[in-house]
Length: 228
Image (cartoon, rainbow, N blue to C red; front, side, top):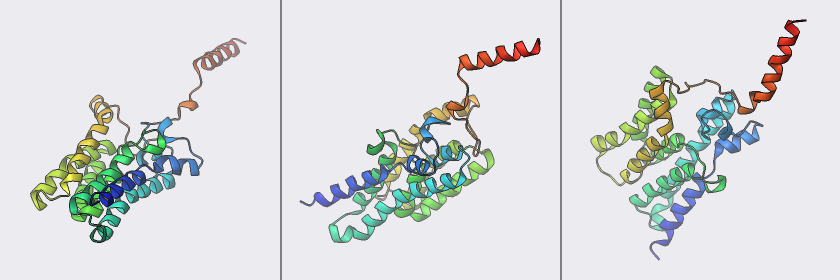
């Protein structure tokens, strides 16, 4: 039964990670579902495009917390329940995977940047800080959250290997970074095409655009008025 507590810890971490706070906070604030506008990504950056900064900050904080808390609890309770360092790393990975494929929301999740940050701050705070600095520098210069996330994800495993070595924490760091970059595939294409949205840029809700028939009728009415 030595496997029972590690498996329970990993499953519980996944369930916590499956809480899609972008959707939950948006509903509580009376906003549109973040999966219905902008990039369609249920994350803080897309919630910010709604123009509701408080909702975006709350989403960011809660998404980071759901990555941090399972790892913190696994570290705290680990000696009592026989959770080793590798299990703790897998707990963090499970919370991150829960954000990407949330069981409560049809397995349609976000890209996991904030959740990955929360996991890193619990596992290896200095690594998290170095990665965060990389994100901030790129975001400040280029104003693309996606580019900052991709660059930070590329750097994180190298920081870990160069400074701390191949510790058990790499069991979470390496897969998270690979998955995070993969989840940004569409953003990479937009960046290359020059069509990626910048930080803080509002996105119009699909329902805001009139249907083609209504738009055509409006133009016809305007044309008739112009000839009166």
